[in-house]
Image 1 (cartoon, each protein chain N blue to C red):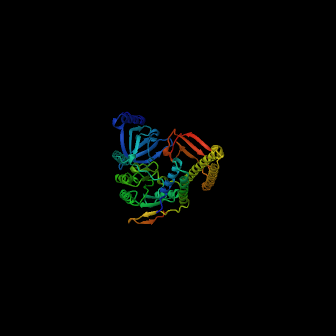
Image 2 (image 1 turned 45 degrees about the horizontal axis):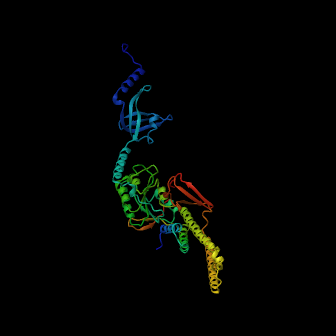
Image 3 (image 1 turned 90 degrees about the horizontal axis):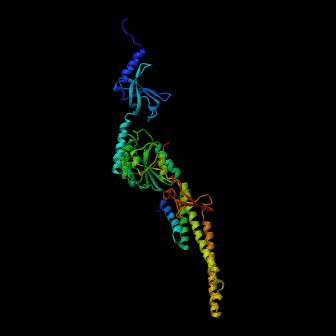
Length: 71
Length: 400
């Protein structure tokens, strides 16, 4: 299963911190940079292409049904 | 008749007023009744009557007292008043001069509310140490409220507008009247099994009686026991319920709850851009540093004048030095090529320069700051913008 958005963002924050604070070698820094850029793109894409989630209502028997607000 | 002594109307009224004003029982009267014929005069005084099933009395409330009451009096309202009885001589009216007035009935609920609040506070249910953190980027949000009405509409539309990738699950509940407290409690328990990141519990505005389920002890305890962090959202900004005190976070309104439950996706995209920019700058600096070191080595005496160092012109050594020299120069050249490539590659990867667009990086103790929770007044901070660094001191930290 794909990681949750929050976890991906946390990963990204961790790498930025490592690069800024840690004694990372150039090779590692480059690896981490490209890895981080991939995560950043995934996160941004998820937000920009956001397919709106449909709200659900939880019925008495515990099943889910699409929920539309009555105007 | 002629022998009788006749009084004037004025002196009779004066006498009656004198009698009444000197009766201790009438100087401080507590009275309950229903308002009728209410008139708020432009002078600021209130004129009305108080009545019960059998009888009525005229009442007046002067501006200074009238300004202090906390509700809008209306005909038909049951009230409790304090005042004194006196006579308006000009009309021969006796009336009650009211200086304090409260709504009857509300008093009992108010006392019940205060007692419950005190009891649960003593037990520690409101203690900040039990407050759970509300996740910043929730995936799934539960809402316990009525399935119709403004509250659910406001919550869903606010969440969809700010952060459409979050999923909203509605756990429908009665939010007023008999049975409301039980469905709210039942749904809080049900909601625990749906892998929620946060749960909003609330309803729109209404009378104190309407909102009463959110003051019930069973509801307070269900909120306290919830594993999922709860945002309460009951009524309007001015309405406080027990649920608000025990919840992990209180929202002023249902719309406010939507705003507190999710970030605005535009802010999140900006934040990601900012991180990309920081990483890029960091990597670029690293590469430039290495480049400088290499340049220095290249300029060093050994490499420029290898023969002088050794002095001996032995053929063998000459050759060795030549080889060494060639190898080193080759390696430097290669490394320089690699570095140049990396720089241009990272420049291609560079996201739109956030700094050039006016964003800045706030740093404290050389660490980038992503939240006000790391900052307090008087902290020294540095702000990096595109062409320099601003050193500054914090005047005020305010939550958005």
